[in-house]
Length: 212
Figure 1: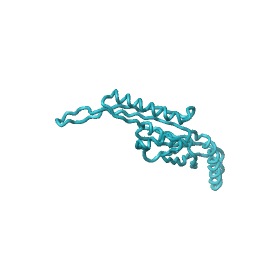
Figure 2: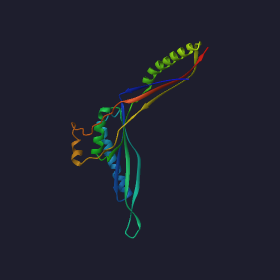
Figure 3: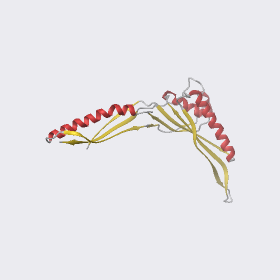
Figure 4: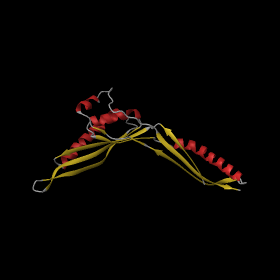
């Protein structure tokens, strides 16, 4: 059994961002209402700077939970309620990632919980490399077979795989001061530096050959 692999580094062409919307209120109903209002505001602001045909913006993972406190007499009571929602953005415009983050935070997002860069479709890159890797295995098999006085007569088994190693951002981006939030409304202001790096695609081939 012979193995061969290659790793290709390519520029990412898609980014996935998750924003957190977290708020506290005296009642569960108020927490939900406030959270929905903020989430809707964020989504509308993001749509204004996104490509509506290519970008996907939606909410997910909503929850509302009571926060308990203990009185001086030892009684456990509900202090308030915390609502948490996620606003997910999938964009094919990598150049807008910093602006999307600043816009979301300026409109009420508490932080960026996830930022990942990837490639939308690795199939073309894999199809390009498969024949080269298989040919290299066949050449190696020919050399090995010749060294023991035989020759390769055919392919017995072939297994291929192609895996993308996405790039995850280090750390989180948190809400700034009101002054900083006001500044991101300007077209010329992008306050969050983003480096996407390169996505790694690992192409792997495993093969067995018949000899005669």
